[in-house]
Image (cartoon, rainbow, N blue to C red; front, side, top):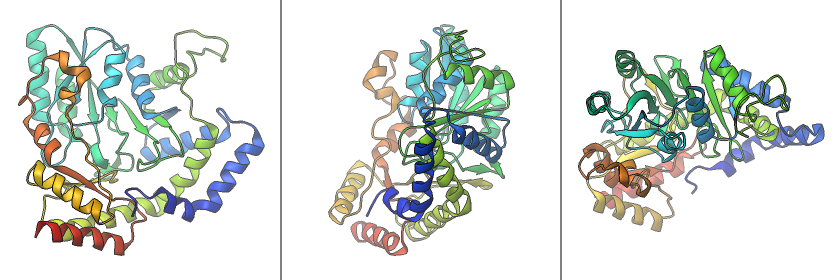
Length: 375
């Protein structure tokens, strides 16, 4: 059993993917070829924004946004404490300071109440300038943008939606990657929409920002690539990856998003009386980058993970260590207990095999083995 079965997906899409790769090889346009612009247009239309600017990976997508806004030393950027390291790393790379925020115990996403307290505390301390909120659509579920937008407007902050795991999610029919002033996603292979290497994209309705990010991703180009008007990056989506994404995006829209929600529904129905299953608020749709359950404590979680491994069932812990406990951020001075929800989640979460091609036989096996262990 695979945790995220990319091999099975390839078998289903093999003919179209092989043909797409051969066409790129025949064209010789391996960098910024025609499929790049085509997938950008398709993604922008799907998300419902004016501009999609592709780039080399999801981390660069976040970086492009921060550079576009001129984030620098002395600026405070608010980041969930329960997330992947890149969400804060990009802040530090611009010289700014990540200010960590606790998350909601049910959705795993940034807590609006904790966010506002962190903003108020930062203002009172007077050492940093509050500038940006980086929301993270963790495990496929969009954050609480209704509450977050009110807070952002109140304190005149920008919202950077980190939709690396959230592409395909919705709130009342509005797509993830459209909620931020700038939004980003990742096409890392195991993401809801992944390519066969690294890739990412930035989304915005702002014409000026889109133009600037288009420049920044190609060494700060001006009217052409040898006219460099600013210091930029080398962060382009390869034509081969764009061509693969076009095939996989079609499958994602036609059936994968629907099928993975069926898998999630079945998991929840079978496990809801055994463990704490993921919570999806009314009006929300998750794209299920992960299906993450919560156990009673670390001992039970680790014991279940070891048992499932013995049964040939792969699982993962996302994430075993809070951001404020990462060695790179110990000098920020956070203490144990500062983020009680995150610290508790890190000891209790376990992610199960999750993908659109998971068979009913496999799903039943996972649920049965969890039942066997817990009973």
